[in-house]
Amino acid sequence: MNTAEIIHGLAANARAAAAKMRAFSTEKKNEALFAIADALESMKPQIIAANAEDVAAGLANGLSAALVDRLTLTDARFKSMVDGVRHVATLPDPVGEQIWERDRPSGIHIRKVRQPFGVIAVVFESRPNVFVDTAALCLKTSNAVILRGGNEAFKSNQALNAAVRAGLEKSGLPMDAVQMVETTDHAGVTELVRSVGLIDVAIPRGGERLIRAMCEAALIPVLKHYNGICHVYVDDKADLGMALSILDNAKTQRPGTCNAAECLLVHEKLAPMFLPMVKAWAADKGVALHDDGVGVEYLSMDLNIATVKGVEDAIEFINEHGSHHSDCIVTSDKERADLFLRDVDSAAVYWNASTRFTDGAEFGMGAEIGISTDKLHARGPMGLEELTTYKYTVTGDGVIRG
Image 1 (cartoon, one colour):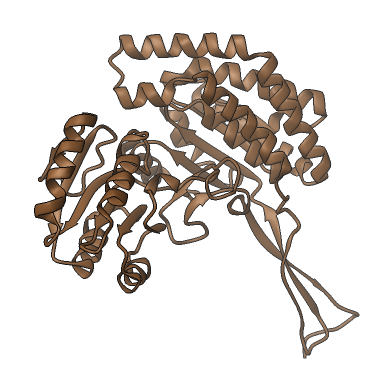
Image 2 (cartoon, rainbow, N blue to C red; image 1 turned 60 degrees about the vertical axis):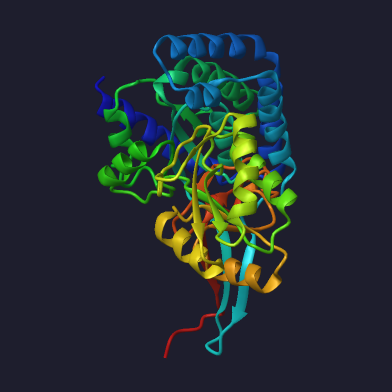
């Protein structure tokens, strides 16, 4: 079969599985999630071995340090991944949840209730844990999912796919509710986002190049963020120790992620005192400082620095040069903080807290399927509720419209 035929077959199987998923109770879906977690643990040696092969190949092929970091399944990340599946099982099931209800003078009763999308295609790069996080969230919300990982994680994803499907088989859920695209042909991504009538929505998790390519080819809706150009603005009324601590966490805790800080803005009155502290910190932590990287997503130990006249100037700078992802103000002035929280046009806006908290687990959503900087349907970390749409159920007693 050619790539188009392969994708069409996966999508058709997913559509059939999605129709079956609607009938399963929350308890049955949770049973499947626990079975998947058990299968992951029992197959850990094979999964770690496959991941080690991918990492070795990535290093040999010159994969960047940021991508190698994202690719690597450490023991801690593996445990977190499995724990995440079990945690999703404990979360409330949004499917069937009533958003609102009302009676109309005509005699009809209307309910607005959450429903699964149906079939979701997720294209991601590097991080194999995304495979499992995504599968868990989609299953919990009664969706079927087709996953297409990057070439660099192909063996890892194959091993994870085997574990997920083993859990599905044991629990009695349709195995085609989770499928992997087992071809590295880039044409497969295009076929996914053009599968009108079979796939309901696509979610890319990767670099700007991948996301733009998907959006340009798509004939179905795409939920995405192009990049993560996140700012930390240190006001002249900031506690400097707090500011440095937040900056350190936002930049160095995991610099290869989309919620890591890429630009430091400093109030011009504070610059003579604070910037020497920043330079000393950067030298100690191995952070390269720049003053010409406006609008750059480094995904590395690099940081752009600029001075601004005040909070209004910082807001204008962020809205012009940022990516509307995650931005922070450090200040003791509540009035300035409230202004920043109101006027910065980003999916997540912080006061005295690191941008690294923009994450589904940290927001109490369990595992996340991605972060959206779109403004339609979903914005920010996307968890269970964001993987549902809704419908109206309308009941009457023989009423007709006059």
